[in-house]
Length: 355
Image 1: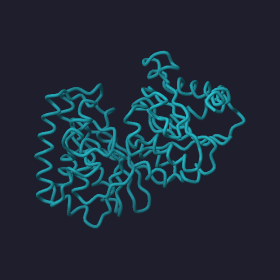
Image 2 (image 1 turned 90 degrees about the horizontal axis):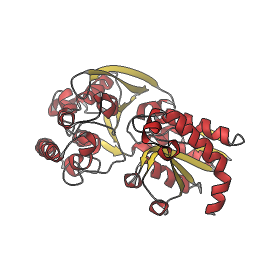
Image 3 (image 1 turned 90 degrees about the vertical axis):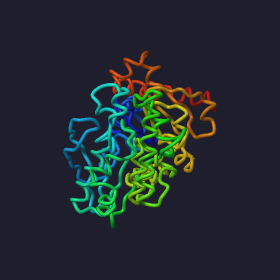
């Protein structure tokens, strides 16, 4: 059996590359006769650059503003005339130095993402692809624009450059389905802080729209990465699925066409996963080739009935296998590897029960 191992990152515990290595190692022990191919994936969030780099290019590092006060070393990928930038490298939740709080939710900014774009432009690229996801800020991309000298200067700096906002998030900037309301609580914001962030983004959206004439706040994906999507759209960016960007670069279609099973995964497999996130996007792509998908996740909150309409045959929880959330996080690689081995050994048994 030919198995394609193509997970996303597992939150802050494992990168997509690390997760793919752990799953592959465990599966090979459980079913040594299988042909296992690792192909880590990303939807534009954490791990975007590392995953893209598996297909070539030059990883570079730039010292930029972090999400609060300290500077950080952020990596980006240079490949011919294209730059691939990962917003989480400058404003990721993991850069806070601890759990997100109300104060960090209000203070975090996207300056560093704008500085990375400036570095890429200085390198002479013609296309800048910005992966959006995993951010701790909700500033609507104001910091990004300020880093490029303000809206007019940023527009001039990116004139003639193809900007791409790589995200599978469809949320708009404002309202009940917007950046502050949906993602603010995940970033430490309480109800009062969400209201403050919403009001700030509403004022910022008025500025963007008065200058550009585009109602960017209502564009699908404008709320991605705390609203960085809105700022990129104001600068003329096109939206593209982050998963598709990675799929094209890593030759995903050819891999799926040759597969008998796809194994993917993420930190938490929940109802948001069913709204166009990488695991279900990949499962749909596999289904087009008649290939079933197996999901491993740090936590699984869905029942089989929730994903019955997809080609996902099962979802396995690392936390359940480990016995506790603490062990699943502290020994993430070992637990994921053990779960993969156990599932591989039981593959024929439980697959037969389902059929």
